[in-house]
Length: 83
Image 1 (tube, rainbow, N blue to C red):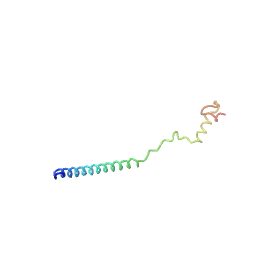
Image 2 (cartoon, rainbow, N blue to C red):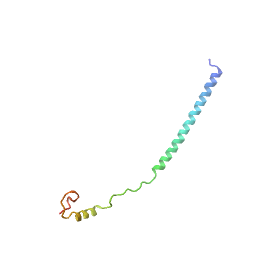
Image 3 (tube, rainbow, N blue to C red):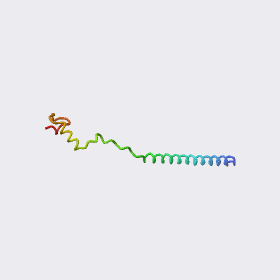
Image 4 (cartoon, helix red, strand yellow):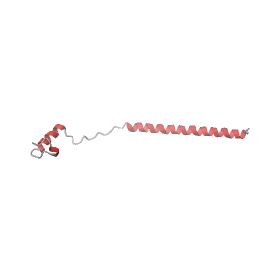
């Protein structure tokens, strides 16, 4: 049979281990909550508007190519616009 001193050491060790595990789980939960709230804050920021290029519409492009490609060879960007 075990002596009362061995039983006491086992009991104290078990209590300390349980306390340590409970404390570290609580710290991890708090830190995860902090990271989760930071991630939510970061995703709510609005994205900047993207530049849509030169700002030329299809109609404006067709008129420009007709004007620029007069008398030029029917190749490259002028294909279908030179006449």
